[in-house]
Image 1: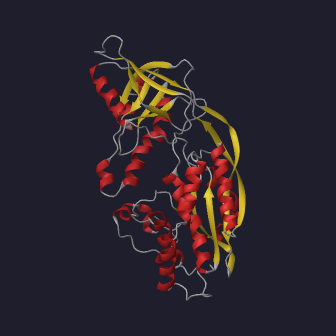
Image 2: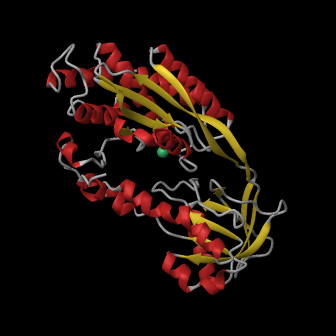
Image 3: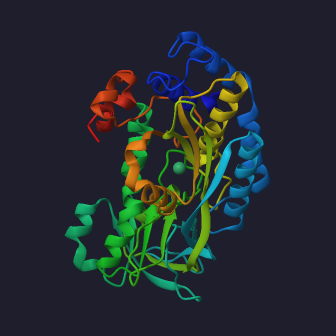
Length: 402
Ligand SMILES: [Zn+2]
């Protein structure tokens, strides 16, 4: 099954290449063992069942939400049942909740009497709120950060719309990740830059190649004190606003009531399969347990988490004992700031040399294009040469020393 492919291929190629499986049951690094791991993972649907549990029984898992708490318990329980040594690492996480969200074009040149137009939008994670009765202002359409700079004097008191189309051609060349990265830089940084120039709200054209008048949420980074309302607008509505603005001023009414609550208590779920020869040395396989609140986060990143969970299941099933400890981590709060990863780094800072490798799958469970890696020079030969387009495009793949 596709969902285990990226993770297992990474595990097979790199971990076994580095001699992590002991020779109790098979000679290290042999093709037969690699094949057994691959076949066992592909034939078993244990990971898929865990994916169903996470998405169907728990659903959305935004940090601080009841879903996130339930997911922690569910994953910890499943890993205990496998016999893994489970630790819940405390993490303080942001607790942002979505409120009402509504957009309406209330005036534009050529507007017939009694006509206003609905704008399909959704608040970005970390967005501030409008007054409860809404906020009405003119829109300034911006195409890139240079234009924002050039038109800085016009921004104050207005709503800035970053109307930047998703680079579908780039995605079609197998570079969906970099295309998404380029698009989401406007979502992440645009509202903050607009707020610094005095914008009363910021909108970004939804990042993604499939346009069904659906807005796609994600994190935006805003400074306290300048936490303006910030939302993603469906591509169709962003294009409409842009077209109307070519005719004359466009006035928009926004009503958004999200709240940033005090930080909440949560956890990284850590499940260890202890190593037989060097148990203090750790190889991480992981995904992030939290998701955005608008859907069940199946691809982002329940497949990463459950694929990682299945590493221990598969090795147990085959009776393979790793030399080093294999540590499954279900990270908390990747989506809104990475608090879980930071907490883990902080708690292991004194002995980072015991963290031998860390693998994370967070690219969905579709066809694998490859993986990106940063490795120390001495481990370079455990990675295959970059052969595909994704890999070639990734500077991190040049095996830079870390
Ligand atoms: Zn993700």
